[in-house]
Length: 149
Image (cartoon, rainbow, N blue to C red; front, top):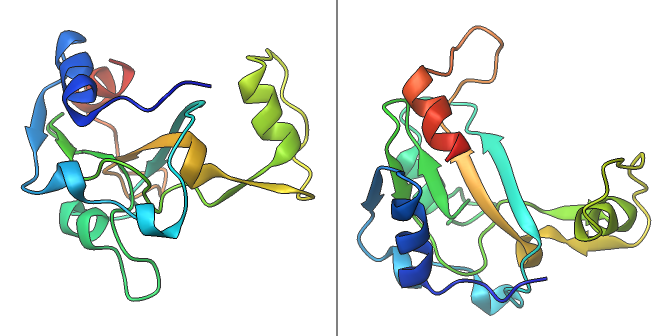
């Protein structure tokens, strides 16, 4: 478990890896820290946005799920936009056994047991990759490359 990186260190780490980064105005203080603790951090959760032109959605969220919905939004053109720092509404709950497998860096992950959920929003960074998620919307090479970085 690691202490979350400061906004400046997170930005520097991404740039050092060659990620094309853009900063959304206000991202460094845009969070849901009032809903619970942020950290220690154990990993990264990556989702697809299930939509196009989704930057505003991950910033603002919805009436039932306020933003930020991730820490980083990755557009089709490979631009990683920072939209939040701190707790974000991106991971929900994890099964304790699945979370413990991540913590232990286990090469084998158990079938998740919904008993004793762990707050994923506390323990994971979140990246939303712009994609419809329908099996027909491709991930361009530049987007894939930036996600790997």
